[in-house]
Length: 388
Image (cartoon, rainbow, N blue to C red; front, side, top):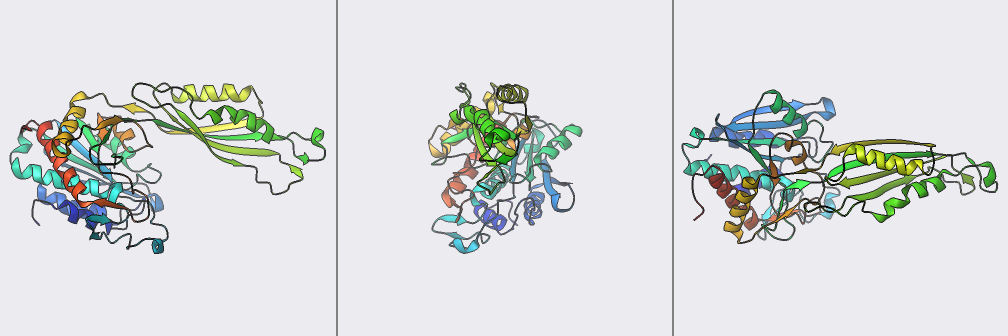
């Protein structure tokens, strides 16, 4: 195997690994076959048992600081009805200037690009390990529960006192074209489960019953405004969305005895889990005390303020695609939320227009541009070659 890795070829091979979350489908083993010849020490770290078992990989080249890390996930969402695809979703076919298949955009091409970039970087920097280290953190549990993946690997690194100076997660951050967006943070995610109780009865005798739906409507009414603040300089307004209301009642002449609802809040740094809990309970208590409320938060908001990290990736992007990227904190959650606990982290990858869609694909030229961007980033981050 040549030490200069072809990112397009590797992307295709990774797509052919049917790594539907939380299974790696052989993708992590494939990655190891590319990394070990480059000199990486590869450690497979598995967490969970049975159907919950997740394969993770931490690979490092070098022993000195700073240790820069690329992170990503090989797991993908299900392809759905494969008959609706124009190609086999796990073929990794290259045609019409694109790479096709599940995971092409999210995010096997990103992983292939940073592995290829590292191989290019090492080919010109033979003595790199004398002044730093490069590491990779790969999981197969990002699209699923995200319990036994990056979250636990971060704890594992912390326990070993393995230090990472900074990290890029190769998620597909761009909206329309290469280089238009980098993610410098993410909002938190707070999910609430509400059960309102009443008294079941006949609709013809409402005075003998207590309809919990009436209370629920009043309790959720403020959520109809969607936004609970005006946002900050770095974050868009925090939003609330009711995602389910269920009474489990098919009888039109029966007042139900209880009703449940689920809602999610994507919140910025103006809030904490406790402040949201207090705000919600104060609101509910004004309507009724006859309810049960549970919640969980699987992501706290974070914002990366490492200017060197941000400027270095911006400079690399501008050099390759002649575009200055927008700094954004929009979108859903990613594994960057876990990595932010141990080091500054940003996200930058390909265009995400087709991720999770039928006929998911990425432009071959974009993959090649991403390799160049990552390679230039490494050069400038470690100060081994100017951009001029």
